[in-house]
Image 1 (cartoon, helix red, strand yellow):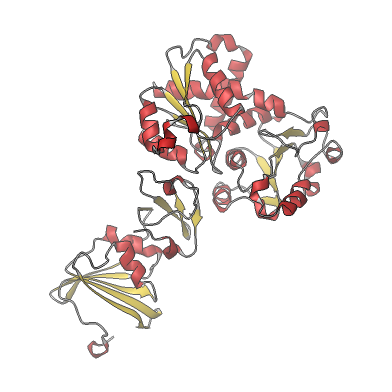
Image 2: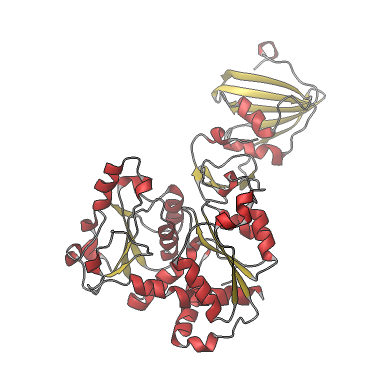
Length: 152
Length: 304
């Protein structure tokens, strides 16, 4: 995308999460725990044209460089996402998200009878298996609509 | 067994299972030799749900090993009614006992408890999750009657919510066993159990009709279909009736067929099966004591 097509301006320092599946940008922010209250500049482009994805979302977070351990969990809802670290308007690092083996504290278990939904002092923990995730407590497997179970 | 806790049957290897069953056989042959084995030990019985067989057989097993037991009592009489978390309850009880036997209505409760304490935790049933000590006595009963390899086993009834089924199916993947699952469509095995069976390389053969597979079976493991699983009582009566067996049903079975049930039964096995020569469910319940003695002995030995 050339500069004159940009729907949101370039950022000086921070992180650009690109190639997010169209419609998932708000879930990306939810997973990262960014809701604006921390004072970071956040820009979102939703359903912008993409050669690779047809339509994609782009999330730009100013003033914060996200580490790979923070962003890998995004692979569950945005497996094609790329993470660009920006300094002085230049991309200094570009990475793809990598599927983690475990996801802690991001998803809630859809099994209402799971002990993690009983007010106990524990974080949820899911193992990433095949094309889904599995609750480390009750073994429930979630395959579809992972974004519906984001709990942050 | 190398594990500190017994939480799920999926953690058990063939060697783990055989070691416990071998020890149970030794105990059954000479219980007196094990009488004072754990004389200074206290076992906590924490049952957040009603239980007869499991609780009494753990209590008996502990006492036959020379150990003492302390019983949390009913939930109504405990501090759970004051809103205490399970994590806090087990951390308190850890200070009183050398091992904890836990039954709880929520899936994953034993996993959580084991994270908070250093003494062995035995899962005595977590909601619709797992019931691995029942599986050990089930396997003991099967082994005493048939051995554990080269068998065809049918598991029938509520496969979706039946925790004894989930544990048994997982444990049987350690042996050369053809497993058949017989249930109404709405009560088939849950996704997580199927996943484990596939991972273990087991083939799933599912049926809605017992007749399809009964003549092949060496073991038929029957479980209760509970009324509360059905939104409509008429539907319950229609479905449950198809999964009841009586002596006439078993006329089509092999003479050596063993019929098992974790109990309590309501009406899914007619009383005329008791005298048929196929019935092993009371023997199975009695095996709970030597098998749980062997399990406690193994875990306590490991903890020391």
